[in-house]
Length: 100
Image 1: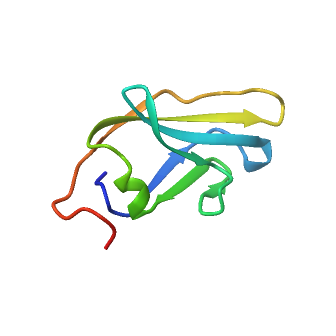
Image 2: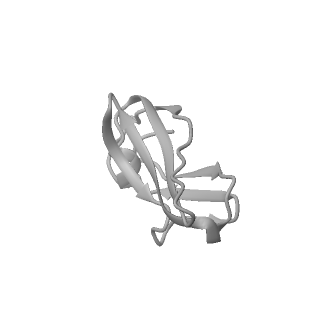
Image 3: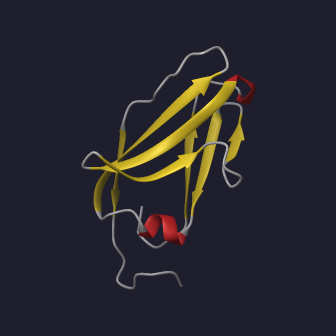
């Protein structure tokens, strides 16, 4: 992933949309949340078994350079609250920062 670019992250989940009550994808570095997306935000594409999250230039620009962690937490209609394993990705900078 690169700062100040648009990106689309796709996550597979073992649930149908009808089973979901709430959910978040959290991006963290050094234990500090740097970005969080609600899976029911209007720009997030949610389908049975899949979450697709578009990131804007501003959102990737807010991510610090270096290794970041991502994790999905869900709240299900039946009361369960599963979380994914933590995932890591590297955020690289760009030579010309800012929105273009």
